[in-house]
Length: 440
Image (cartoon, rainbow, N blue to C red; front, side, top):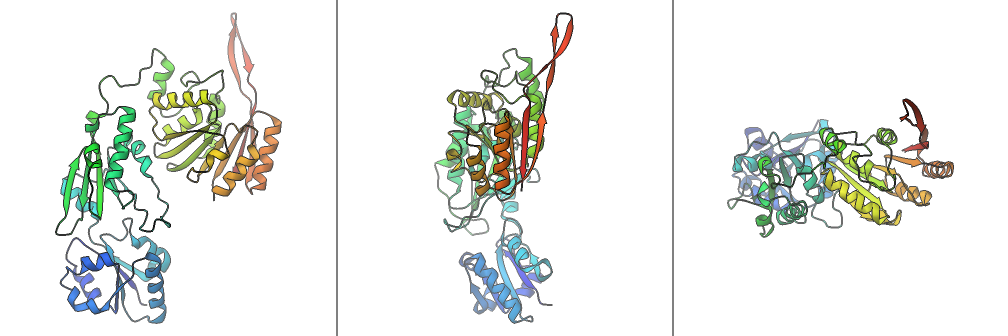
């Protein structure tokens, strides 16, 4: 059975097996950039007439499929950068062609080389790609976005990034510098390294603070490494102060279980502790992805979600100006930069948000049907949870979820809390809440 070969190049001479495959290949596929890299190899002169340039992934895959179908004896080889399975074309080739039909021979990855140059271990680093592709109209969906970096750095001391011309080192550094200014972090807490043109004769390593790197320009290709100095995270006196409230201090000591007394809110308008716990359970939040909290109120659900999963992007949408102030104060109090706050009315305010993986609707302003319809058009598969205090909202939510082809389940949460009366105690009932879950 014939195989297709994907061989990584760029950093080391070809190994024996890779060299044999290339010398015996009928066709060697490469992009213009990789042809320039391959031209520096001693094997290039022997096979240069067999090199075919294709500069887009879809065209490359189509050619490989056709070659495999037309001639099962000829060897077709694709040249890739570094390790093809490290955010590279190797994943797509395996998915499209099949594991049994593909053999991959990697070179070093650009990230290995970058960490070696700055003499830092990389087994404790978070490795991400902000490389969305060269075509501005067809940029791939990325697991992380530029604006996620500050929240990622709140839980990770070391992040390495594959960049592109849009998400370039200067833009990345400016994003970090802006976040530092907003939260009053000192600039020296972060060291940013840019590793340019690794493997080329003119490769270059630049290190500096975020503000220094933001003011420069760099050659492609490059990678960025960010290291947070844990000893320099906050200036003196910038810590959150509990102001004598033990509820707040206890909240800092645990990841889950914020109390109503710890969260700034107005007029008792807050998702109560017990209901919030059930709501979060029903949401089955992922560790990463996008979570919309619509009608966020004081932001209690957003706060719990963001603290549980620091790499989750949380969008709190609220129309009331007083509540916006509460959410903002709570985000600062509990140090959860992965919450983005939007002052607006749903569903109109949802237009420019990234598509969600999970949605909670705590308040709808009478537009529950339109909100669910909008969500249904944006979310391919996921979970919506609605909290309803009235039977009318319950019925409207269930009908809207069913119209959007969600499987619906409903729970009624009735909570009574013990209170003292004289020398005795009694239970005071709170208003029951319907928790409606839609899943598709």
